[in-house]
Image (cartoon, rainbow, N blue to C red; front, side, top):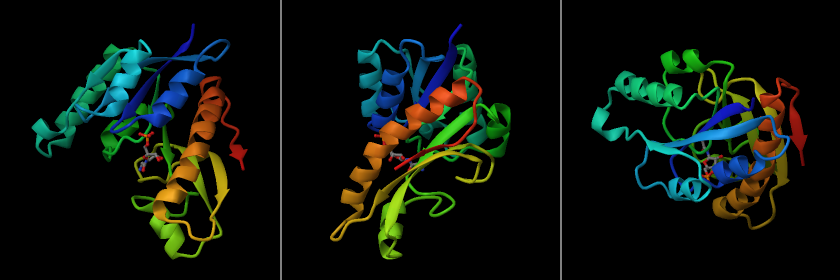
Length: 197
Ligand code: GAR
C-alpha cells in the first residue's frame, strides 16, 4: 500500500506539481489530496489536470477563529485518508494544537537555509545581509515557526546584481528537486537529511 500524501498550497503550486509528478512508479507514496485555503489558487487547476482530488478550506469565513479553521482542515485531511502532509507554499501559520495532531507526519519547504531567515521576505533578507549563498530547506513542522528538524537543504550561489526575484527563481528550481527527494526518503521512513548543491 502506498503512503497517502496531502499537499497544502496557497498559490501557484509549483512545488506541489514537483511533488505530485515525483510520486509514480516505485515511489512509496501517492498524492491523495491537494488542499488550498485560497479558492482561486492556481495550483488547484494543476492538481485537477493530474487527476488529484482537490479541496478548498477558505480561512476568511472563519474570521480569525483559527481553531475552527483548523478543525475543518483536519476533518478534510482525515476524510481524504492523509498520512503525510506536505506544506508547499501554504501561507497560513498553524497553531500548536493542529501541529501536535500531525507531528512527525508534516513537512514544509522554506526558501532559506534555516535556521537563517524564518518567516517572510527571505531572499531580500539574504541579499541585504550580503550572503554569498542562499537556498531552501525542508523541515518537519513543529509548533515553532520554521524551526523543526531540517530534513534537507539545497544551496545556490548569490550572483552579482541579484534581486529578490532573480534569487527566488534560482532557489525555486532547487526547491523542485529538494522537496521530492526528501519526501521519497521520508515516506519510506528514512529521515537522513538530503543535501543538494
Ligand atoms: C515557495 O518558494 C516556497 O518555498 C514558499 O512559497 C513558495 C511557493 O511557491 N514558502 C514559504 O515562503 C513558506 N513560508 P509554489 O506555490 O510555486 O510552490
